[in-house]
Amino acid sequence: MKNKLHIVGIGPGQKDLIHPAAEKIIGESDVLIGGKRNLELFSHMKKEIVVIGSNLGEIKTYIEQNLGKKKIAVIATGDPGIYSVMGYLKTNLADVELEVLPGISSLQYLCSKLGLSWEDMYITSFHGREQTGLKDIIANNDKVAIFTGGNCTPAVVCSKLAGMGLEGIKIAVGENLSYGDERVVEGTPEEIAEMDFKELTLMIVQHKEGFSAGARAWNYTTPGLPDEMFVRGDVPMTKEEIRAVSLSKLRLEKNSIIYDIGAGTGSVSIECALNAGNGKVFAVEKNIEAIELIENNIKKFGVSNIHVIQGEAPYVLSGLPEPDRVFVGGSSGNMNEILGWIAGTVKPVRVVANAVTIESVFETIDGFEKKGFKNLDIASVSVARAKTVGRKHLMQALNPVYIISAEKL
Image 1 (cartoon, helix red, strand yellow):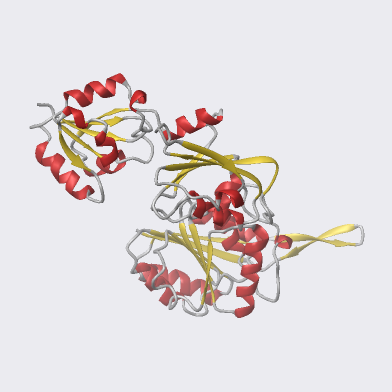
Image 2: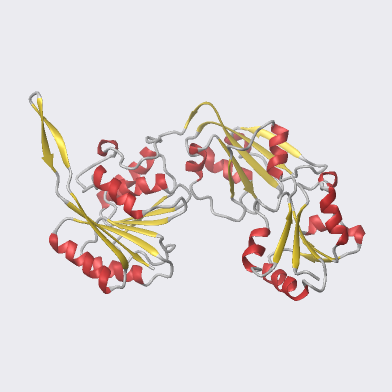
């Protein structure tokens, strides 16, 4: 018997929406694996059943031990290609040939109910996941689909949205879609937050005409926010031209975990948060005045994925999620200790450090080399800005900055 595992999408739940090809594969199978509610649809077939719960490891072992001896079909709600068990099985059964049959997803079903196209829709899931970057996701996308479940109900999500200053959004919630007790409701975040929902729910968030993302001050995708946009005090700030080059050296991804050590006013943290909307930024700063400036700039730019950590690195880093990227704007003389801490982490990390004095340049390069970092890159950036003198412009130089980057592989 060929070593092939069928993963079958059975649609949102109603039996009439199951594709005939899916019924054929299920009918020819010896074993059906799936959620309890899905398996009940086929209880009349008297198949061997294996219920999926929090036992994915056991499911994997069962498939490995029985595939080739029995015909096995894994039943997935909706379409297997969107937030289903397929991803786990593909990753953990690398030697098994998968044959996937698509089904009608709950997203397709709800969009059809609402008369919505969904080719331009941002899709995410908060089912058992932390609601990272929620405000940024909503602010940056006209239509957002959110799969909810567990402790993360539509009411919980909407309670958070109601306090984020997102004016002009409307929410649609589909509950038990395609079943006899199906419910589709629409309203504001405040209205939905007061409602109770059952386990199987999907939210769609849309912008209304005149949508406002609250206090969000920068809507462009390019780095290098103008310095004058930030709330500033007597705390040093990475200037916009240096910031733009430093961000390019960081090579951020949408879901990067980023440390900004010696965050100052938070200018780098803000830019990182805007560019890594699905990630997290930890702004590490020991100065009380700077902490207040960072928090004020977070409010001004309307970002929700920055966590302010008061204290001195590396001593306050333990217990934080391990970083993918680290920017060191100020080390407080602890560069060697900071690099040593990073070198001891598990994941690969890309580090970018700014240095002004010759001594700090040496300390950074020496630390990278002694701690085993690779792909060392050193750039000296000199910026001059025009200053008006009468009717003419005179170029005034800023301090040269060394931008030093390396990787812990």
